[in-house]
Image 1 (tube, rainbow, N blue to C red):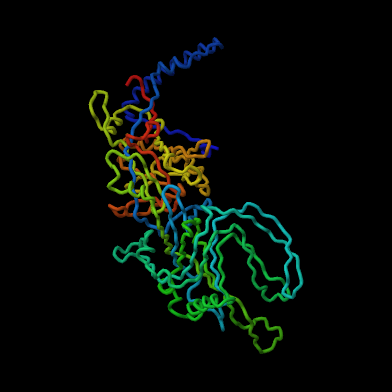
Image 2 (cartoon, rainbow, N blue to C red; image 1 turned 180 degrees about the vertical axis):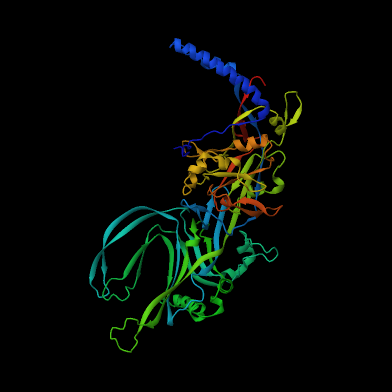
Length: 600
């Protein structure tokens, strides 16, 4: 089945080159057209059978459509490390709220090899300088990390609950069925949750700018400090799509069922006093929070970040396999549930005595501020050798273009970098030659064919790729002019910006064939000399609605621009480049469809 979605209506925008020169020609032509049409209409009014206006009239006008094909120079660029803090992965709703979906787990790419993703995050309390009350006792500590999910069905059911006095009561509850989103592959991996002792600073002391953290920092630079205290481990973790039922004591209502609530699928770990190991966790959090009431450590953000330095979620493959999920980590939290004593303000005896009663409180620690992804990629040796900087031909281009998300690689595209033989039989710079043509540009596109001999076809192929200015990271003019950009549903990034950044085109067997990127306005701006002919970058994208950029280091340079949406993507593909050994029908080309006057 062909999964290429139909494009939304596309209004072509045509622009004139060399307008002053062409205007006079058009004026004469339009005068001829007006006179001719007037005569024709007169004849048509006298003879209903007259129907041969068509081609003769257009032929008289002297326009012709044609195609110009250019072969860009293209090669790949491999990143040794990429920035992974403050990654934006998507937008929600009409108000364009951003969310941060961080990958966690193990992903085996059939082409590029295995990548392991872990997360290190700071946390912040919902209140500073908290008061826990008299004789406070920590009852439980709950780690809650919601998965990205959607409801597929809801129904009301009757549930029999047992009251605290042993009797039964029937209640009606709404049961929801969920489907997990952003889950890839289904094998188990080992998940460990640690309290970290590595301090994540906000600013780089050398530059006083925001501190940048990289994909290799946790494994290479932070050392064992991130694994200070083991809080939880699951030797065979696979996310479940089942909703969770939470129960809490019913408070002051005697002899009634415990309160119940249903929550979305999530990783939820609760520590109470059931086992010696859980008691030890409670003792740690009691010493760090309840015993620190009124201390400087809990008084403000700066002090707290230095005191409680973060949580580390470590993923490890099992038998070289696993699964990958995306967590909206900003919705995750750790909640401390505690009991304390307070005065009873409802004195029913109306005497001077004050009763003491037990009450419950909670302190919520949200995952916030610095959130960093560790990415460890075991790249296929053959591809790793091919991607070495010294093995990439930046002058003539390469046969294959390697696009890989995460700590991956992208393609570099150099348009109009060569020469052509002009109408005088002389060698001329291609861009200068095109600037001299009196062309009306109708469409310009790059078609990237997938190298099926090296790619495993199917749902592991990235659905979208993204093009940008490699020097500045900016989107091209065609992005904003895309009619579907205004009509796009940002919650459905797979079907956004389709006119400019076409989805993968698949054959009847669901195998990817090519990606088509329209750069009409970009080419027009080049020929009009409105912009410089800079190199372009092409990368895989987890979400084409995200146009922010990060930085990365290659083996030969630092602070290279890379799209955020490529870093958050786990997928990869191999595209044909412009190399001489690429089959002609699959070779990367820039196709320019234009109209010109025959009188030129």
